[in-house]
Length: 254
Image (cartoon, rainbow, N blue to C red; front, top):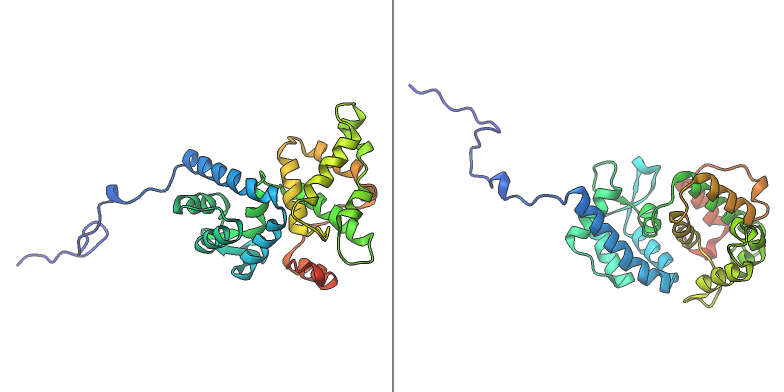
């Protein structure tokens, strides 16, 4: 009498696809190239019409979930990201692009993409310490107005280009620095309103060109008077963002 075969992963009971025929995920180099290409295409559209940054954020949040492993911040699945990006931004995403995004931003293995990190990651990422500074400047501007909304007029009035380290060294002209700043924020907007996610996106681009945290800190504190006296806060959590939104309902940001 023959001994019955005990099913195991080594002796499958039904035919399976040989592993050599299964599609392989892109290696790190390929994923990086795909993500860089996607970011370039997204930035070309978002930089030309920065209002789409907020529109993209809101659409993703509306269809996303709260990821407790990311401090309860908004996250979305790859399928949702693909659909929203194609509709709101008009940039086509292949499945390989989605896989590259998940590979870059999913740190929990749940297939979820942190929405905030994805958006300012388009410009090259915004490390936590720098993000705190960027958010502190935004809150500084918010505290300086009674309208409950940060506007280009407020930011322009507070931005001290004369204190910029490269202006002081003679490398840059202060009027040109201010002109470039204003021109960026005037694109595609008539109300002059600046939303938090747009602010983070803008400074993510500047951050990508600065290697040292110390220099980024120096630029921010010198160019935005009043920030010197502010002790760096922790990153805005989902709860604190909701509290901020309750004060500035017209921003429709969260």
